[in-house]
Amino acid sequence: MTDKRFALLSVSDKTGLEAVAEALTNQGIGLLSSGGTHDYLKQAGFDVQTVESYTKFPEMMGGRVKTLHPKVHGGLLADTENNMHREQMEEQDIYSIDFVIVNLYPFKDTVLKEGVTLEEAVENIDIGGPTMLRSAAKNFNRVSVVTDPADYPAFIRQLEENGGTTLDYRFYLSSKVFELTSHYDALISQYMNQQRTRLNETEKPWDHLTKTYADKTELRYGENSHQQASFYKDVFASTDSIAGAKQLHGKALSYNNIKDADAALRIIHEFDEPAAVAVKHMNPCGAAIGRSIEEAFDRCFLADSVSIFGGIVAVNRPVTKELAEKLHSIFLEIVLAPSFEPEALDVLTKKKNIRLLEVTMTAGDQAAEELTAVSGGVLIQEMDQSSELTKDAADTLPEDWEQMTKRAPDAGQIKAMNFLMKIAKHVKSNAIVVGNDYMTLGIGAGQMNRVGAAEIALKQARDNQNVDTDNLVMASDAFFPMDDTVTLAHEYGVSAVIQPGGSIRDKDSVAACDERDMTMVKTGIRHFRH
Image (cartoon, rainbow, N blue to C red; front, side):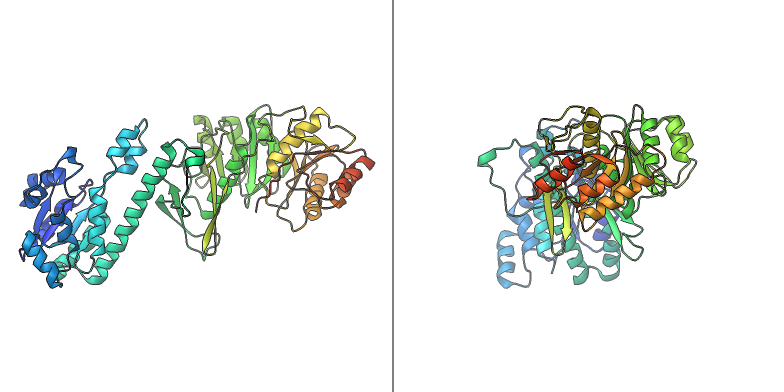
């Protein structure tokens, strides 16, 4: 064993490496390195020893095995204050490795490349790097381990001022290593889970969950100005998600912007036909479909021309110049669309603060799971992707629906039921949505009782002077516990009702409809959203 201190350097990212190597050699610290890092340092003029010459064991298997050796890990893990450790180091001619500069194979960059194969991904799973990092981080009492180039300046400063590093600083570096290795392993786990074929009854899941996120964005504040907030993205986020959206214009998104935009996107994914939705405080304030995207937006605006002010609009067709001029005339926070025609961008970018987001509108499945943080834990559920609602404007009763009343719904009412229930499933419960077969006219959201939600929606519909409010249709996200909601609906001109059914008093609401010559259909699927 030599009393000389050594540093082991093995990096895929060479940024700032020469400055670190120079700072180490200035302190008389010997350099150990392997592979491309050794060649890079040698070419830069540094006196650097190969790991292979130190271990007397060759790199092999195409570089898969090069630092996995007792002389490396003994040098990292040894407690040099322990006599037994020192004796064994002497016996085995093990250097004391006091500094480790290591970062990992670019697994994330590899798997995000278009067309990457499983074989390519597997070859970019780093084994030696995380193992060295963990060994060094465990022994932070002696070993300084730097894995983030952003830490190089502070590390160099400590070397220059102290000839080494402080215990507090080494503990900071150690904790950062374990954050990195857990993130790295979670990335691999998530990728492997995506690639594998499900084995059904032979698959035995763990009772723990590991998720990882990246690309942190510091937000100005959270829901309120006194709350700090950040936005982390799923590394594998698709382009039909908010995390995968491309911002074309406008100032940075806020915490509330992101949540509202996500709510708008979830709603617009329900539709195949041209559709537009306006969202405020995570609830739709207006939604509509049309023969063109311009017509859909006109109807969406007329649904609630007051609440849309300062809101978020999502459309599922390219934004044309004609639509852009309509949007430009309103104060909006965000517009989401699959694309923006050049002339439309010319119009909309005249407002410097409006955010324009380009999002893939596949109208397909969103992420399979939805996570919600609670005190001390997280709730996980499948996304609400029930199939009882049809993508198109069905004008015949779907197979899964059941007519509950004597009177059958006509084609227009069935279309309205299908359209309005798609909106109701995204409104905070208790939720009631009133409208026709192409637009909402009133939305009652997040009320403590269903008749209260209905009263809000019905009054809003009655007061809307922009469209005919005769023969209204009402959709409810859950069953009616009593017949008061149906009775109130009739007073406001509702002729048809759609609801999940399932109350022990369903027959009371059905009887109330029959007495008033109304029609009622049940879907069998509840859509609470809390």
